[in-house]
Length: 315
Image (spheres, rainbow, N blue to C red):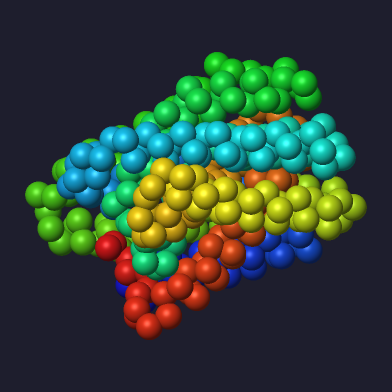
């Protein structure tokens, strides 16, 4: 069983791509997810709480300036790129709003694994992801309302409630579960094996559902939409790296901030789009999730040559 769990955790990139392709050609494979897509995302956050080591966070929080700089870069660079994409791409209002939503989300949960594989500063990555996620119930709806109100009326409070229920509450429950499981070492070991696989599978299902719900629309605008996704993702990596150089961070932290900025929590963006807006607005998030996982995993594979690192379930 552990082999299967490790395969799922290690296979996030190919599984996400496979799910998106299957959803495009056979959408009914994933349309059953509709009633519970937001709880799938809650499962990813619960899983993160189970595997999160408080000791790592305490050590990294000793560098509050670097964390504040990194989180500021995340919430300035990507929302700016998302707004530029929405303004100048010529896409429909729903798709433009979708870019803004995914750009205003915090960093992706998968970024911690990618940073590890690429040889970056893992503890710094975890701290950035956690702090940005903790701020997201307030910051993400505020940014979406500010940047996206030209396209549609933005439901600030309902969005905040969705983020709290699908992100913060399950994360805290996962931390509580880990604390309880620490008294049962064998159960904790199994949970640490299971949690990354659950999180990976949930992200695959969420993104696949977003593609399945929009497969007809995707056929007509797929190339243009993908081109914008590629540009925004590449600029996110580049500007994140430049910001880290400007901050005077070392090479490991420069790599980490580049990954953190370029990889958005597109799963949360998809959930917010599907929950509060028309289904088409979820397409940018779904494609961004597939693309950024592929690019970051590919870059990590290149950078880790000779290190022998792999995704170790529960590590």
